[in-house]
Amino acid sequence: MKAVVFKGVGNIALEDVPNPQIKDPEDAIIRITATSICGTDLHMVRGTMPGMEKGTILGHEAIGIVEECGPEVKNFKPGDRVIVCSTIACGQCVFCLAEEYSSCDRANPNGPEAGTPFFGGPKLSGPFDGLQAERAHIPFADTVLVDLPETISDEDGLLCSDIFPTGFMAAEICDVRKGDYVAVFGCGPVGQMAIASAKLLGAKQVFAIDVIPDRLARAAEQGAVIINYDEENPVKRLKELTNGFGPDGVIDAVGVDAQQPHAGPAKGNAVKDAMNIVEQKTVAPWAVLFGGQWRQGDAPSQVLQWCVESVRKSGVIAIAGVYPQTAKFFPIGMAMQKGLTTRAANCSHRKYIPRLLQIIEEGRFRPSQVLSVSSDMGDVITCYKNFDRRELGWLKVELLPGQSRQAA
Ligand SMILES: NC(=O)c1ccc[n+]([C@@H]2O[C@H](COP(=O)([O-])OP(=O)(O)OC[C@H]3O[C@@H](n4cnc5c(N)ncnc54)[C@H](O)[C@@H]3O)[C@@H](O)[C@H]2O)c1
Ligand SMILES: [Zn+2]
Ligand SMILES: [Zn+2]
Picture 1 (cartoon, rainbow, N blue to C red):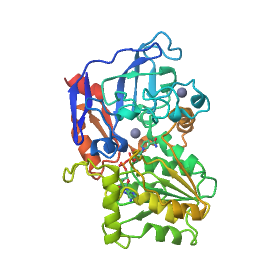
Picture 2 (picture 1 turned 135 degrees about the vertical axis):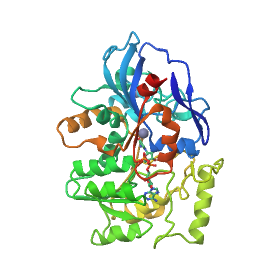
Picture 3 (picture 1 turned 60 degrees about the horizontal axis):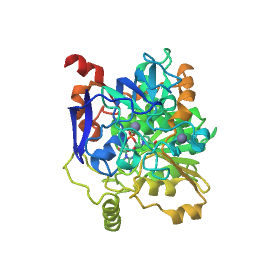
Picture 4 (picture 1 turned 30 degrees about the horizontal axis):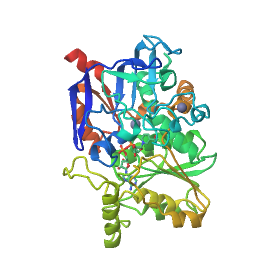
């Protein structure tokens, strides 16, 4: 079958690989009908999420049809239409029973302290082969798969595999309540879902910060007040917009590849530049420069700094953007002095998906509105490159593996 394979930092390819096989009685094999590219995949190709093993199939977002089930799979049978949870969980350990699926004690082959296991990630996360393929092996199928109701489109289902739950988790751990002011840093796909989710939880006003014009425009269409950090100082502007207090909650939907402003009043100085270089070298000392492609962020803790500076005293910071274990910079002094609550997590997809499917069925939100490109799997490398460069119109890319199979 065809799959997107990690070959090294800055090097991915669509290759022929063997079909997946059932390994354990709780496994299933699915045929993937749609998959997508995520900002998390970019961290891995850029080298800022280290430890990828060559040969790992990338991707952790998909829907599909069950083809085969191990003897202990109870909830699914061949032919079922399913959403795959990006994160892998056993469903039975003490953490899973508490719905803390991303902290599952059993699913990570590296042990209970190794971190969240997920599809298509680095060695420490499994490694598990990913979902940008024609078929996939699904461990703990009864927990990792969720039935996709007929009433919900493929596109809405696909976005429930990772980013709608992640945006919703971000708003929930940000403790968003009715009437709150909430700032979302990053207007990529996850940021867009966080904006929508903050509104679903009752936020009075959402502020959205980024630099990419069409992503900011999309946030404005969702009703957010937008701030371009190359034109305005986001911390100053957020204070102005909230009577000098700062938002009640702020969400980091950017992660380790954060950029610093390259123009405008928040643009850096020599001291900040030097600190950014130290941070970059600490986070990813092995990073390779590929010109304009696969460019790592030039200020890994920029968004964390802005979150702490801008949120009101006693406010909440929710970190959904991904940081690797090598990222060590957070302004703890200011956070402590302001009495902030800071929460960070990989999403427990299994916990949120049923609730979000209901929100879609009730017509309250359609996550598929963020999908801007639908492409044949055969063009996946071009799609990755355009999404990596944040080309205009490349907000979220859906890939259709079936199409390339038919074409082949
Ligand atoms: N916690 C989870 O379970 C989980 C799940 C999915 C994705 N993620 C993470 O969420 C993050 C966002 O994912 P995405 O797919 O939207 O990625 P993306 O790369 O498409 O979007 C990131 C956005 O952040 C913007 N940005 C960069 N520097 C900024 C700054 N200083 N201030 C404001 N905006 C800035 C970029 O212009 C871009 O639009 C990634 O780190 C991804 O790994 C986390
Ligand atoms: Zn994702
Ligand atoms: Zn578990």
